[in-house]
Length: 247
Image: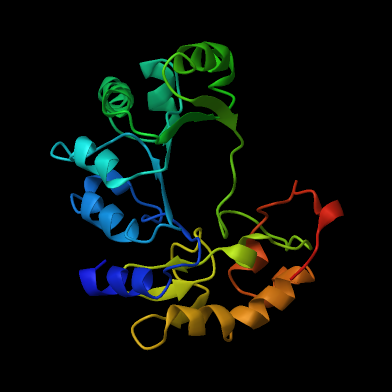
């Protein structure tokens, strides 16, 4: 994302208590500009910065600068406690290097006295079940949290029917592609649900305007079939809607 785009998004969101996640479906710590992005965000005392990472950093990524800039939360995903299982998971990268990167990140956080919360996660898969307890036991000694998470299906990845259920994601989240187009969901890797473009509208105009408002009303009623992206998405199929308050 070009500098003028990410700065415009941040400038137009200041003072609103936003949690920024400067990544989409990519590994954020291959972008050497990340410390600069964090520093710019943290000029707003109400803002927080979170990352999800596979631990496969750029060799020149400056962990110290990123932590000093003010990261609030990082979730590292490592699908395996052994190299053999990790390779089978298909996540990519060299297992030993990734473990070393994550441990190094934790050690530097501790050395700096940073308040960054670090979670290490593994997806619950058939191939990982025999290693999950060892994974938890090991990473609890180093990270703040060690958790097992559920696998989700990406939209249009084999679903043949529409799930008739609301979706809470659009209720309080907003997503931008690198060119500044705002999309319906973080899983919208192919921009099937464009809701605006920050190059010609403000963040607030996109958030409060259409089609964002139309999509929210449809998803509140569970009418996923009326939105192309959502019509083949079964995310939140286990979501507890008993306390659903709508919009």
